[in-house]
Image 1 (spheres, one colour):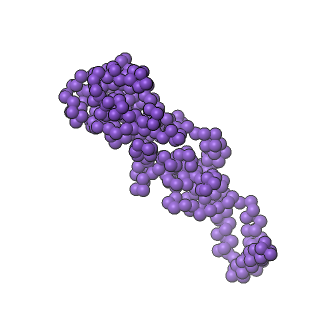
Image 2 (cartoon, rainbow, N blue to C red):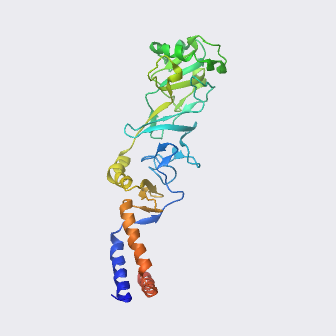
Image 3 (cartoon, one colour):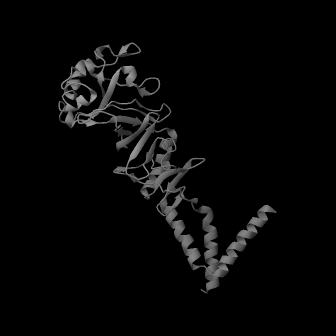
Amino acid sequence: MNQANMDVHLLLLFLVIIPFTPKLTIAPNPTCQSSCGSLQIKYPFGSGSGCGSPRFQPYVTCTPSGDQLLLATHTGSYPITSIDYKTSSLTISPQEMSTCSSMHHSSNLGLDWSSPFQLGPSTFILISCTSPTSSLTLKSTPICDPSSVHLCDSLYTCPAVVSLGLPLFPPTNTCCVYAPANFNGKGELELDELKCDGYSSVVSLGDYPTDPSHWEYGVALKYVNDVLDNSVIDGKCNSCEMSDGICGYAPPSNSFVCVCKNGYNTTVDCYNNKLYGQIEDQFWSTASFTTGKIWFGFLAGLIFCLVT
């Protein structure tokens, strides 16, 4: 087969395939990442704009350095320390949250009512409160769990209590196990309203329920996928991730895209993206200068027909 015939066949093949291939667009920069620090990022979360679900992107992003995934709310930005995709839960570690080794005067912790996040099963312990905490109420309802006062006993054995202005082994009537925890009408754990200086939050007591130096600290949150997110996961995202792509969206319509490592987005998955790219590269690398003129002539003629 001579060069001219080869060029014609390649041109015809390219024209026939174009209508049936997934739509490709240049991926936004920076390209979506599959991890941030030590955490794997999967749908509905994303590393930045255009990544993951548009419902979650305003709240969860990766730092520019790529070493920390953060949850942003109206009260602050909090490091995400773990994600369990099977149970739709995550844990954050607010910097002002007290632990056995470090206790702080804390600012309010809150969640946005419009966000897809809500409090999980962690245990809040309010510390350095106005005594007696048995009188602490919200909307005339006592909030402290008297059956869990042993957690206050344990936490108050930590030497770090002195940083809150408390003596060593302070009386537990300045401590409150807030269970079940709930945020106020502003979506906040408002410490001034509760007359407490700080809080601790425990995800698990582990194998040492009386030793707070071995407790797992953090604030557990649940997240909720809506019908559209579940549809994307079942219909498109699983296929995208199996092809080593990252699920994302394309503003302003926020339609689904699969972000591939070759720098392109596709509406299907990266397997189709790779096949299309190989055909495209083969066409332009093999075609002669004459074929190029034919191709651009065809496009020019098509445009002329459409506008006249």
